[in-house]
View 1: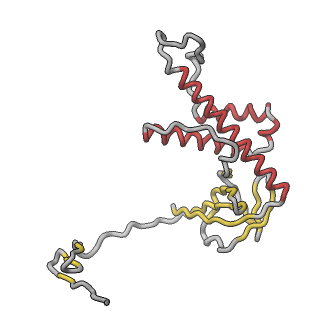
View 2: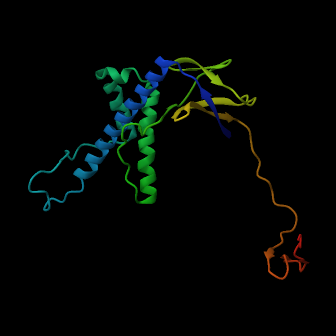
View 3: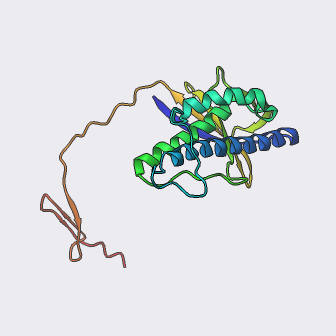
Length: 222
């Protein structure tokens, strides 16, 4: 499987831009809420029985499972029914936000440091549409779920044989951009080593010394 990422400039109108800014803020709130949920669960398991705080202690019942990605994803479905603001955002975009947080925790466990931090206003600058049934390109426009058609500057064509699997919409200081994740089901063979390997060393008296015994003089250009 061969994957490529092509970045194009997109031009949303005022209503589309306001809607995508609203999406970014909702994704930030979902990210922070999910992070707080995980952090409270972890803190409730750290306190020793004989060393609790004298003033207060945040305690979660022992039968409550760790809020992993799948648990929070299931809770997000109910949250969308109760909160009208979340209903305006595409469900897969919100799920990808939870997946982004889950990747941060997995990366922290691998490195053994770097606990995920809460996102301040404006720190989340991208949303991901994780899958498409058909190509979102419509000539010189791109169609995004719940956002609609908007012009896209296809300064280079999408290679033949590649399918658009994901689209990441990024907000930068210079404008809005769409990163198309392209995939092609091809086999990329590994290049087998051939010939005879040699060692090369740089020197002062001689420019190069090769393991075969060859010495190359310094090129005195001046």
